[in-house]
Image: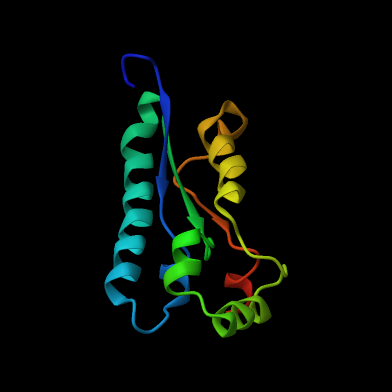
Length: 123
């Protein structure tokens, strides 16, 4: 990227480090570390024109989660806490990821962009 006079790095984190939910300490710590690394690398690589950001999604409902973990009660409780009353889908991550990887976000670096339907704001 240095040789190309810059570039874009998009890391993937999660809102878990913002929520502090019980039972997920290692997962939460790992996502907090990804966000911290994103900020550090933004400072390190910025002078070379390399932007580093992260996408921090909420609960993205995949088929695996529906098959293995997501009970109707869990889904309903999650929507009750979320501002926007619809479930995040994998395709909801495409636009924000493309934005972070494009020149439309050319002056953004070191940021964790939250896409969560409004869960973090409700605590």
